[in-house]
Length: 209
Length: 209
View 1 (cartoon, helix red, strand yellow):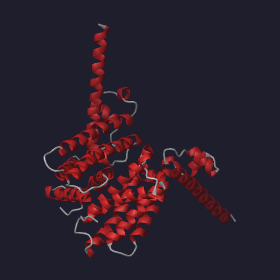
View 2: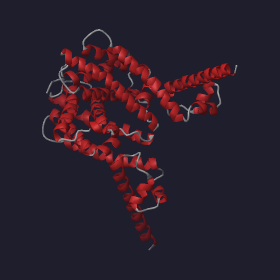
View 3: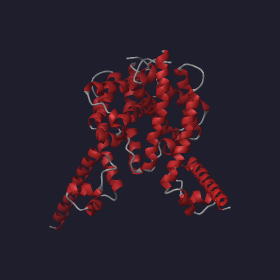
View 4: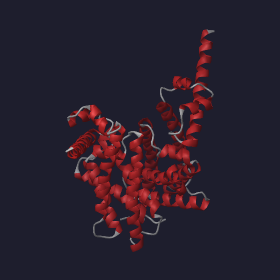
C-alpha cells in the first residue's frame, strides 16, 4: 500500500509541475519573461507561490526550463522544414521561411526566446540553442556542398552567420519597443521574410536568386 | 573659499569615478563581466567596496557604464573603417575585417561585449548598440545602392542581418567554453575572418567575390 501511495504522489507532483509549466508558458507567450510574475503564474495555476518554489528552485530555473521547452519545439520545427524534398538550397529556404513566419505569428513569444533581456541563466540557454540551430544548418550546408547546390565553404562558420542573420533581423520587428515596425499585412510580412531569407541564402550561395 | 573647495571636491570625485571605471574595464577585459567582482575592482582601484557604491548605484549600473564606454569605442572604430576611400562594398569589407580582427585580438573583452551572459541591464545596452552598428551599415548599404555597387534592397533589414551574421559567427570562436576554436596563427585567423566577411558581403551583393 505504501508503495502505491508513493507512486500516486509522484504522479500528482509531476502533474502539478506540468501545470505550472503550462501556465508559465502561457504567461511568457503573452507578455514575455520580464512581465511574467510568480504571483501571476501562481494565480493562473491555482496554487500558492510557495508551491511553485517546491517544484522549481527559483524564478530563473523555471524560466530556463520554459525557454528550453519552447526553443526545442522551434528547433524541431526547423528540422522538420529542412526534411522536405528538394536540394539543400530549397530545403534551407523552406526552413528559414518557416522560422520567420512562426516568429511573426507569435511575436511576443519569439521576442522572449530570441532577444528579450533576461536572467543570465536564460542567456546561457540561448547560446546553447543557437548552437543547436547552427548544427542543423551546418548539416544542410554540407549536403549542399556535396551535391553542388552550395559553393565550397567552411560550413561550421557560415552556419553561425546564418543563425545570427535570421535572428538579429527579426529582433527589430519583434521588439515591443518598436511595435510600429512589425508588419501586419500578409504582403508586408512576405516582403520582410523574403528580404531576410534572401540575405541568408545569398550569403551562402553568392547568387542573386 | 567654500566655492573653490566644492570645485576641488567635484574634481576629486570625478577622478575617483574615472579610476573605478578604468579598473573595472581592465577586470572585464581580462576575465569578462561574470568574474569581475566588486572586491577585486576595489582592491585594484585602491578603494573600499563601499566607495564604489557611492559612485555607482549597483554592480549592474557600473557594468552597464563599462559596456557603453567599451562598445562606443568599437562603434567608432567601425565608423572610421567605413570612412576610407573606395566604393561601398570595399569600405564595408574594410570595416567588417577591422571589427573581426579587433575581436580576435582581445577575445575576452569581445566575448564580454558581444555575448557573455550578463545582467538584463547589460542585455538592454546590447540591443541598443546592435542598433548603432546597424545604423552605420544601413547608411553604407544605401550608398552602395545609390552608386550601383550593391543591388537594390531594404537596407534597414539587411543591415540587421549583417550585424547578426558578424557577431554570431564570432561568438563560437570567442567563447571561453570553446577556446579550442579560437584560431591562433595569422593564417587561421585570416581564414576565419575571410569566411565571415565573405558571407556578410555576399548576402548583400549576391556575387561570389
